[in-house]
Amino acid sequence: MEISSLIIKAKKWLDQNEVIAIPTETVYGLAASIYSKKAIESIYSIKNRPSTNPLIVHIKSERELYKYAQNLPIKAKILAKTFWPGPLTLVLPKTDLIPNYITANNDTVAIRVPNHSLTLELLSDLEYPLAAPSANPSNRISSTTTKHVEKYFKGVLPFVLDGGDCSKGLESTIVGFENGEPIIYRLGALTIEHIELVVGKVQVKSTLKDSEIPMSPGMFNKHYAPKTPFYVVDEVMEFLETTTAKTIVYIGHQLNIEHRKIKHQFLLSENGNMEEMASNLYKILLKADALESDVIVTTWFENKNLGMSINDRLKRASAK
Ligand code: TXA
Ligand code: MG
Figure 1: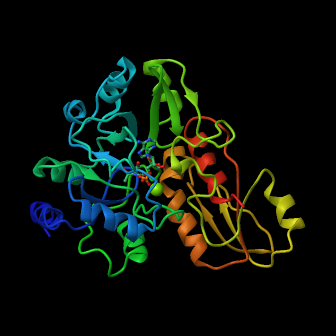
Figure 2: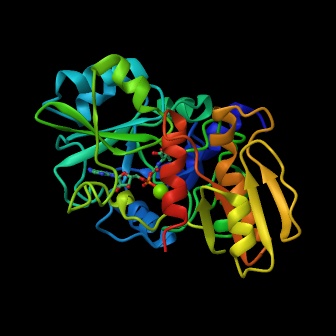
């Protein structure tokens, strides 16, 4: 179908208070008008998401930010200007244009401009922003292809806007502010190193260890999980020798290994490219999970740049 007719179709469903799937550069989202209480309620029930977990609002341009958020710290303005459209979500005090049912009654709103041409075109044709959590049942791995969305929500959604595979493949980085200073609440596709280049040193509070009360419910440890028991280790050979599991799926970063217990193996990137590894991570985790082996195993990344965001997801996916 032509792009313009896809957009018209998507808009038609959204205008009728329906929930559809939309592509973004990070992961697919389950989208609805922020002004359709009925559609927002369906998002929560389709995902089986606790009503206390607020949604991200997707807007068409940085200019729109000032309609929906207020009292912006200067560093929020700089971050929005530098990284939007892109994989950065800002948590800011909301204006009255954001209904309370979007933010789970918080007085802050999480907001971003996604960097995907189809979705940007759709947003510019709509009279309202879109609330969109990742297109997966609560606590499961996010969808980075339409195939994943269709597998999770077969027969449930009237329409999936097909924008191809998500280029980043990891959720957006979420940044909030305390006393005007940026704090990373969720590591993601935009690296800390990139953020620090424009606003200086930032703090990370993305694990329960760092704060008593999770600022962002995505911070609950168990998240993004496959059904198969999943292990992340330092030394894979040692794991293979000591485990009692009989069938093992191995996810390698760049190189294959030989071992009698390995039933199947996947590589994140043959040339060791970090962006490629990040964008393949969920796809490969879902494929590995589908093999229904006794365990899936992979190794930790060096804890910097995208490796830090990938390690964060590996930690949650393997949390017991
Ligand atoms: O990349 C992404 O961010 C994707 C795409 C679709 O944009 N969306 C996404 O949404 O990952 P979701 O709902 O799966 O994760 C949003 C996270 C949740 O952990 C939620 O708790 C947090 O953002 N969040 C939303 N509003 C918040 C707020 N006002 N304060 C703190 N955290 C908030
Ligand atoms: Mg999610």
